[in-house]
Length: 447
View 1 (cartoon, rainbow, N blue to C red):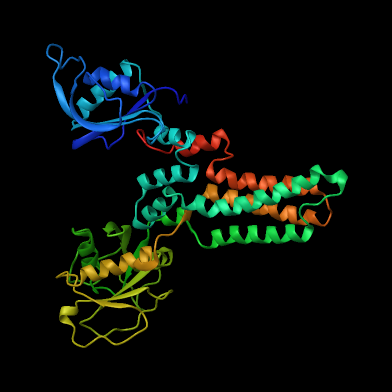
View 2 (view 1 turned 180 degrees about the horizontal axis):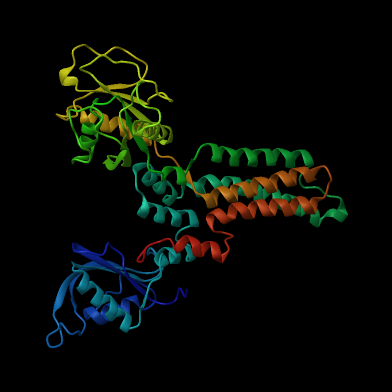
């Protein structure tokens, strides 16, 4: 990857739309803009101008011009710290691709995945965690992921790490100063002071590990199992949540014979709702198809993240033997309820799946179960790369602590240097090229 090339890419979604965006970055960006627009400003600005279409089979005789908004950002105050141009064009994919190919013919090259953001990192505009925040923002599938991505993008992880790194670097500097003056028998930090410093550093890292979520866990799509007796209205409730007829609904009990699932969009992300076969207490052939249906339903309950027990509010709430306590009780058919709800320890919602009354209340409750309480605030999330670096740093600190009693200052300094380098890898200060390649190759083109 040569960061001195001028690169071009479509940086918006590809498809019919009101607008599509083409992005240019590099030393020739302004010159290429002037070639297709007739002129280009030397100062940062936004303006409207026609862009002339390139020669093609469609425009072999008369090359039309199309209106565009042009945004010019000059180095070093742009996203990439290079001259950067954005062309906001009418959202016709064919026209936009023709313009991109014309820019390539004039000297630009197609950008690689993530190359705009990698240039921002390599030119010092972002640290590596902020660059990962860009990628996570693009791929966020729920509100928790989006909030965690925003914190990475804002530099929150760097702000929490830098005091730890400064404390570690200061201790290392004192130790290495003592090594330089070993012949004069001068010590800049005592063993007790070094232990106390390492205690503070390890506590800071462990606090970071305890008070952060895991990116992999945030990206898991929560699964809810609807359980209850036959004809409690689970299938009707599934259809109401899905906003279409996913399950066959019948007044005959036991219509659902296998687990049916549907993905639904809640206000904070996607979840999967699974309607399992109605659970019977006793009285079925333990070796027949009914037994297999019941066993599969109970396995689904065990594998689900949350269990929603659906009761028929028009009948007596007969006990149901579940292998785990439900996370929420839904009293369906509340419009036919013959008696008021009895108090209990499990959160309960009365609704009518048929008439969709209180369905919005249920959806908010499902969202809270899946993604946490709404007043809990954004959570900084760590990925596998961050966790590995923190673990490596803790291991090096532990090894350094074990060497204090031996008085081998050079060995201690080596371990502290490794611990500092491990933390530096998180921010990209000490990062092998193969790690950079893995991070930026996951980006989409144009970012």
